[in-house]
Image (cartoon, rainbow, N blue to C red; front, side, top):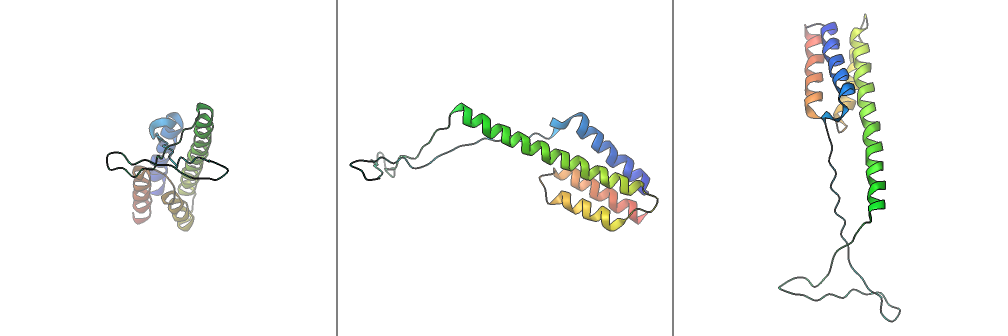
Length: 137
């Protein structure tokens, strides 16, 4: 395999991610718990009654729908930014591979940056294998 062939395959990965960005979905389930405390006579305290061998501490909290939507938007924004960063990094790798004199150290630096992210292992392993094959042939 040469660098041009590797670039074509990485470019296909980029196109696939652009065409179907939700193929790697991240599901976030949030559970918020805490200590239920009450103030009596100006003090702060916690009252617990042990039942059935429990600890006697009532730990629970709730979040209203508006706060959950804010959290969801923040997560969605962060994921969109990370997805765009993935596409940009893969595109930079493609450009380097297609360069008349590809800079292996730049390609390796870009590849290593993917491994430090949330990027699915299937992408990092395929891209890593392609880079290795492209420079050993």
